[in-house]
Amino acid sequence: MKFLGKLSLAVVVLLCCAVGAFIALSWAPDRSLAELRPRWAPEPSQFIAIDGMQVHIRDQGPRDDPAPLVLLHGTSASLHTWEGWVAALSTQRRVISLDLPGFGLTGPFPDGDYRTDHYSRFIVAVLDHLQVPKATLAGNSFGGQLAWQFALAYPQRVERLVLVDAAGYPRNATSVPIGFRLAQIPALAPLMSKLLPRSMIESSVRNVYGDPDKVDEALIDRYYELTLRAGNRQALRQRFAQAQWSEGAERISEIKIPTLIIWGGRDGLIPPDNGERFKRDIAGSQLVVFDDLGHVPHEEDPQRTVAALQRFLAE
Picture 1 (cartoon, rainbow, N blue to C red):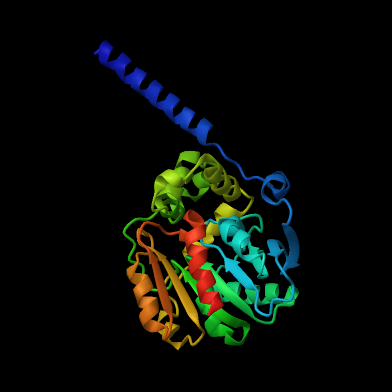
Picture 2 (cartoon, rainbow, N blue to C red; picture 1 turned 90 degrees about the horizontal axis):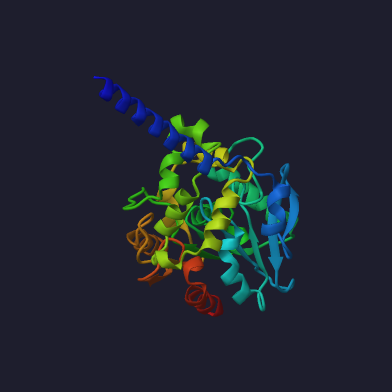
């Protein structure tokens, strides 16, 4: 009995040590904008005042473009996801990328409202601030949902529409990143506000790539550090709580704007059949599928995907 008692005590001690080690290795309090800005907002980044926020934005290329490209990233991403596209496009086109509220360096909406109509009003405010009356709007995942909903609400402001693995229809995911799953569990909120294992971010990023071997340490660093921006973790939980995943899907067929649909054939979060649905519902739209790419094809292979966009823009 004494032996069993000592053994039980040893197990408890080891368990406590393991939990302590996990907390020590995963301890990740919020980081301020001032801490993150030097690494993640070099030139040509700038910050513009919109609705009580300092919005992280990059505005590149010739200013005489009659319909600049505006690029909207997906959940837990940032404007950096478009760097490959921007490099290819900004020599001839004005290209505007930004960190949407709740993500990247922009930080949370002051009022905590993460409904899509609020984001649409935010995009109007950005376009007005930049004196852009009409834009070609491109969005990935959640950003894609914002793009098509904006096109429905403000068709006079959209010249063309580009949907990259866009959200919109009822969810039929076959694989969801662990970070997204945990963010939707309210009971974990106090824990997740202070702990963030880097391995969880690595797993989540690899999950959305068609070829996980393309995910390197620099990419993981970016997603990890920008998730720690003060307010972003709470904003993610709030957005998931407020999200209506297929809101307005019945109106997608009303879109009359020239539309390009780009999809990764290995996307498990929003599978390729969603791209087929967009093509069926949006009259005259084009669908290009890259069989070997995942949920962020523009980031995973910017050269091939931007070539499809350039052909569309040249028509």
